[in-house]
Length: 237
Length: 212
Image 1 (cartoon, each protein chain N blue to C red):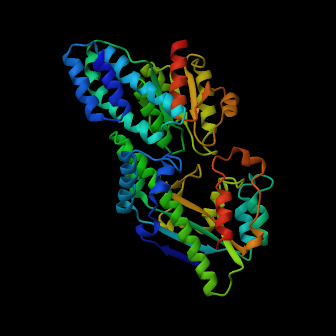
Image 2 (image 1 turned 90 degrees about the vertical axis):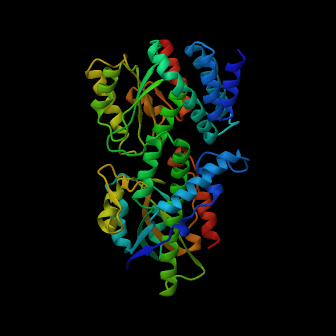
């Protein structure tokens, strides 16, 4: 299975609170009305410029082992290393919100319109995350339609560069998935273009396999600990 | 002087229009441009920096204040050039070769300008020798490098090693920043400081400029 995932800008429209958070305004804070205006402007601009699209491709455990190992630079143990052997299904994915957004962000900074630039950057980052969730839902729906996922199971996505999975594994991932079909390319430094793109693997399996503590050695360097929120979402699937 | 206090206060409120008007009025009153800069604009940005460090305000508030700062600076700049008034210091900034992330670097540049520094922004994907060439050409005493990938951060070491080869190590200070970078990494590669945000970058740049 290898399918493009069509998306509309509305499907990846981030909530104002999420954009404010991405702009550095902590939750529970009452921002100035101008700051709220900045966030709204970022979202409005993103909606006009974004051309979100995704790609999902099923992959066997054996093939994924090769992708996961990449260039052999992963941490010795990682959440994904523990999870994927227990998965019932695996799929590689890539999503992007498109080139136009990144180009506009650069232009805004070039013209010292940095308040809008920061807001658009935040909105686009959140939109890319939402696009990844759309791709994950697409794959989940595909599995349900083909009777390969039921209510006792869930999905969770991982990306190279996080949680001990070395970023250099992007090269193996891109070689296998070939997301240039949707306009996503990888540079020699493993940087994706367009910048607001995400790639990784979607792991599907029984809900109970998706439990891990954030006490790996590399967790101490993590600034977000968003894995806790993601695991909560898995429990609610 | 009341008008300078007003400039500082309106800057802190992010009122770019008012800062522009008041700065124009201060110039008409024939106040010295350096005084308007130091006691009006920079004084206001210093309060903003302190509030940001204490988490009383957040990045968007800082940016609104910076925009107000720019409104005043735009009027003062030609006068300062005419009078030969130097800036606080010069900083070369760039995202290292192979990396295209520049939001963080851009924000550091905004904060440095807001603190009175002249910034030579080389942009993204900057080759190691360009950092040093720019520092030598501009007379900058500080080079700031940004990297957001573990695959690109080794280039920071290349720049510093090249500085050693060219006899610039110790003459130019190196600030580094970006998500995968740390204070330990700065020490490891011989950088002078790791700056986790623009406020820290301004602090370090001021300290290094005073010391030189």
